[in-house]
Length: 194
Image 1 (tube, helix red, strand yellow):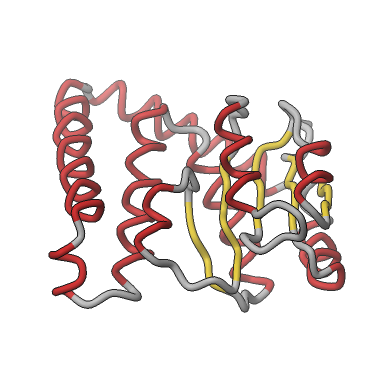
Image 2 (cartoon, rainbow, N blue to C red; image 1 turned 45 degrees about the horizontal axis):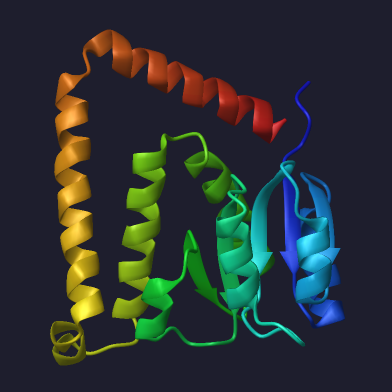
């Protein structure tokens, strides 16, 4: 039986961090950190998913996120925060952005979705991360604000270009390739749900 995935919860509100850990403990190996320094101490190659608050004492969650990416940790990062997204979030290296509050079923689904994404190659993971950024910022900005922001326009262009590349790769696959990928994903899904 495969070992459970490891989830690191980084949240300065101890009760909330412990609640998240409790919700996930039946399915995952869960670590908690209540500040940026502890989060960086808990990080290693075994961490599969990080649930990261942006507002932390001493150093921000943004700093922790930058350190995760600088060190090259191969983990999915969900920013789970009370901070509404703004255009500055487009520059952060997260995989998805969730504004609190979050319910138990939403949190469990979030972790499961991020673990599924980690099975894809780097380009597909990048596509999902960029699409998540676009969806996040579109929930808080008007069409006029979006049209006026160069970072948002560049993000949309990056998504279009990556989509063209991915579409080309898909057309290069044959039926046997699709069946192999489907079988592999189904096998992984069954293993992680047991």
